[in-house]
Image (tube, rainbow, N blue to C red; front, side):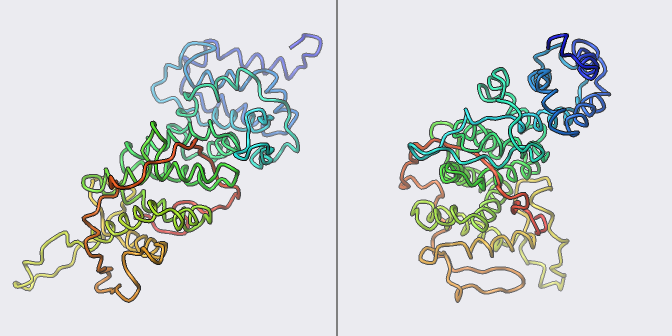
Amino acid sequence: MASGSCTLSDQLLVAVLQLLNKDVSEHGRHLTQYFHLFNLYASLGPPEKLQLLKLNVVEMFMLVALDEGPGPAIKYQYAELGRLYQVVSQLIRSCDVSQKQQSSQPNTAPLPNPHGDPACAEPLMPIQPKVVEILYGRATYVKKIIEDANSSEDTVKLLKFCCWENPLFSSTVLSELLWQIAYSYTYELRPYLDLLLHMLLLDDSWQNHRIHNALKGIPDDREGLFDTIQRSKNHYQKRAYQCIKCMVALFSSCPAAQQMLHSNGDLKRKWTWAVDWLNDELDRRPYAAANQQYGFSNWSPPAQSNETSNGYFLERSPSARSTLEKAYELCPEDDSPVSTQNRSHSGGSLTVNSGNSSNTSIGDSSAPNNPSTTAAATTIVHSKSPTLHAGEPTG
């Protein structure tokens, strides 16, 4: 910035930013207060955001998060960078990223991005080339915020903004989320599944591509949700259950996903098998009733949540049974494993005559191969879009 145009506030901000060269890395306990100053300043309005953008705050903060500068890596073991991620999200969403957008339809302009910063009527400036390289050119920052700030509203907003009409960035986000869902501890899955649902509900021209690849996998890269269910159903049942619960929320709230389920024979078969497996597990008696002859009570304590408790095997909770009911309602009529007249409720258990479907593998080798479609991951258009657990008890 030229000295002639440098204001007092510029000088103060530059002085505070220079602390990144050494002092910030040595005082990790105060990171929240340090980055909160910039968060408050950016929240004042578009002029302040533009001022921070011109001072290259976005690039500097992203490099700090990745331990790449401008000073030494932060020495504090448990660095709290939540405020840093908020500042980066605010400022990037104030920029024009149309250069990175394209429609899935040839010779068609991309849809207008509705996920910019609402405080800015128009983008303040084109996104800076060095920020483009860090954000779009490599996956490290995306992985960092998905791992460290997956429950933050600003993370959701940033991913929505960057994934909109951008198949490559969407693929990066989707790939990372599918990996976390496949391998994270089962009691840590909920934020990743919530983020995935946000991505799949993003209503741009790439929505069908994202939904398809989330369900069936990204070719030569990541397994899809059905693959994760198949691999987890014997020894990591809570993981398989949470994937089914996520898909129940998706099919219930997204017409495009429901249409895909009803029109794709392979998806219909896999969904039917997954629902059948869930029914078999919930209908299975965990303990034999051998003690009945002695008059002992069959009472057992309430089941724990399948989303927050330790352990690998499925808890037969009321929420799990509610999920099963909703899953059956979503089964295509001609492929539903049960008809309504075959369902019977006894003692809170849903009994289903499902034939031999429980012996059918979700990952059946006869299923057609996944089409090599470019993946994309995205988000909800409406601020009050349904989340994975909206209005439901966990379990």
